[in-house]
Length: 206
Image (cartoon, rainbow, N blue to C red; front, side, top):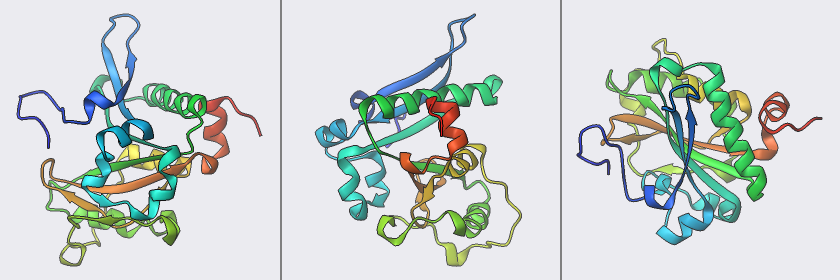
């Protein structure tokens, strides 16, 4: 549940997470953030945040090396490729240094139009769907059958970036009533990361 304090987005997971930040070197202001929940801390709190939205049973065997990311936020004046690249480079370094193998998270799509755009986007993601062994199941499914999925709709930049890097979409979207978003379950096996991204974010060479 989100906090009801104006301007504050906080929940019970924050104290267990590490927080990756990007600062403007001139002003010192925080301009980009990611929240990182390690498998060890997920065990300590008892679950991943994603488990409130999805049944992750089919991913149980990945848990010892599976990191959850969320709360991606970039200041409106800094939404450039360089800010995102710094965040992703930090994530890649974290994964490599700790020898983790999978990233999971919920990627949100606005439901300001009632969910029709989200349904339209999801319909076009077939080539990015995970193998059945990695499918998860929404606890509060977006009612896809009741929505118009033929509308033109552009994927949010963050989701585009995940998919270009090699991430899977692991099943139908969930409806998050607290934020009024359609949330896609995303899984990124580090072994699938596109070689261009691997070179850029990890320094590895083919």
